[in-house]
Structures are given as C-alpha cells and as structure tokens.
Length: 111
Image (spheres, rainbow, N blue to C red):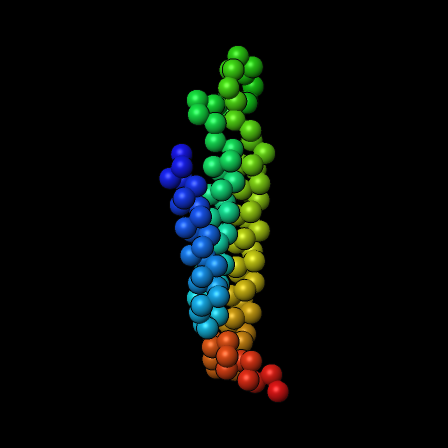
C-alpha cells in the first residue's frame, strides 16, 4: 500500500515540475493532466478498504467500501477532461493568432 502513495507523490511532483519547467503550452497542459491523474489516484487510494465490498443491496457484509471518494474521482475525471479540452482550445487559438506556443514569446507580445 505504501508504494501506491509513493507513486502518487512521484506523479504529483512530476506534474508540478512539468508545469513549472516547460515553456511550451502543450507540455504545460500535459503536466496539468499528469497532476490531475495523481489526484484521482489519491482519491481511489483513500477509498480502498482491504476485503471491502460495494455497499449495494446486500447488508450481510461486514466490511464495505466508502463510495463517496469514488464518485468524487469520477467527477474529477469529467471536469478534468473538460478543463483540458478548454485549455487545448485556447492553445489552438493562441497558436493561430501568434504562431508560437512559447510562453516567453507570448509575454513579450503583451506590449
């Protein structure tokens, strides 16, 4: 179980590093997606119960899994996909207008 939390920490740090270190907007969007994936994995790990079953229709089980973090993870996936689509749409508009995806060059064009 500890290795899973280490994977979450590594993915989170990789996502933050990708966002901060890259000057290309597409790579920054990819870093955001990696960061989002680490948070979804964390939500799933929080809800994991060894030997637990889903609390659906049957009350004879002693150990059940909390379904709320799983529902939050599904909501996070949907919202994250939408936000990623918007970020990519804005990136396409920036490229069509300025012919560059470099953040430093876009800052110089601000005036």
